[in-house]
Structure formats: C-alpha cells, structure tokens
Length: 274
Image 1: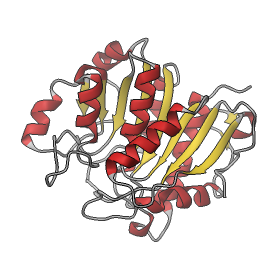
Image 2: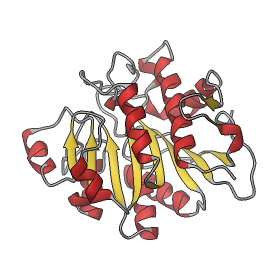
Image 3: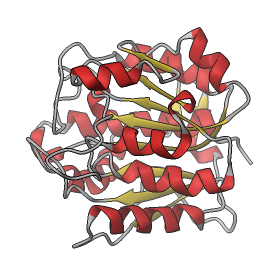
C-alpha cells in the first residue's frame, strides 16, 4: 500500500523511501514495522490540509516502497540508505525505522550539498560517542552527524533527555532546546543553507504519541510543530525523515496516524506543485 496520494511520475518532485530497521533499538523495539503501519494509517488522513490550504493530489510525489535491510549491520544499513538517497533526484523523504537511518540520508546529501545543515526534533540528544560499546546506534546518530558536518551546522529541538556529558557537548550545537521553536540564533546559523530535517516521533509528548521505543515526558505539541513547519517552509529543505514510530507499542494506532499526518504536512510544506 503506497502512502496516501502517491502516484507514478517520470520525474517526481519527492520520493518516499521506507527504511524498516530497528536492530540497535533499546528498551522497546518495533520501529521496523513503522513504514507499513504509517502507510496504512495514511488512509485515515485526507489529502487536503486545511492548515496549509494545499492538497497532496497537486504534488508529483511517489512512494518507492521499502529498502531491503534484512540482516544488515548498522553500518551496512547506513550504506544502503546512503546509496538509495544518492540515487534519488527528487526530495528524499525517509520513513524509519530507528533514528540511525538518518545518517545514511545525511551522508548522501552532504556529498551533494557541502554546506548542508541538519535540524533534528528529538527527545534525546543522541550525542554519545558509543552506546553499549557500539558506535553506530540510535543513541549515537547525532554524534555521528556532527562528526561529519561539525556541531555548528546542527540543531536539536525538543530535547529533554541526555547524559551530563551529552548536555555539555550540546553547547557546541547551533541550538539545543526543549521546545519545538527554532531559536533566532539557529535561524541565523541555518539561513541560506540547504537543510535536512529529521523528526523523531519521541520529540512529541507521549500522551499524543505513545508508540515509540523510548518515550520521554514533557514533549512538544502538534501546534509547536505546525509553527516550526511554517518557518521551515520558507527555508531550503533538501531532505527529511520521520523515525522511531513503534507500532507494537501503541495498539490504538494513533501514533501512526499522527506520523501520517506529519508526513502529509511536511510534503505540502516542502514540495512545490508542478
């Protein structure tokens, strides 16, 4: 089942790519099931957004299905994601899967855009150099990204969990704030740059998005996300993802429905009709 409104286009302006992978997940696994669950949940969402007054039916976007990541190590998975995103001509929209998949997309786009900046919505800083002896994991993904790009080109919003050392390291980022608002300092740092946006569903309060592996209280609201999206719609977004939905952790399905709604809004904000 393709994502709501996706069609077959010779030159799609955006391409959805499923990355069903959760081999390094801790506490609660299950995000490998997210791409299929989010596509299913999209059937409950209208193609038209009354908030943006735009319709998915006016966009030339396609759904390329899922990457085959069965049995991959984290490093091998990252390389498969990198290669797929590198081969994508339109805006790549990744559906995770655990947050580690983000690095593959960032690596591909950094080759295309040497001045790439990254904005992450996440409850966790993910700045550990290694976790349980492993350097490639959902808990180290932002550290690997800052290793590649430099911390001054990365901002994390919605963060409210991390070790003492991670919070110290976060002082070098363009921004590290608990709210979903993009600080003026980060706007200055990101102005004019091509930007990759990564949305970890655990950035949202678990009362509205319980289906995730590591829920953390005091998350951002959907209204805060909508306000941020209005700002980012004026920026140069060259790729985005939505990660860490764990359908087995939410039998109600409302987290997948929220994820589908978020993807609709991201597509409408970042893809021009044509």
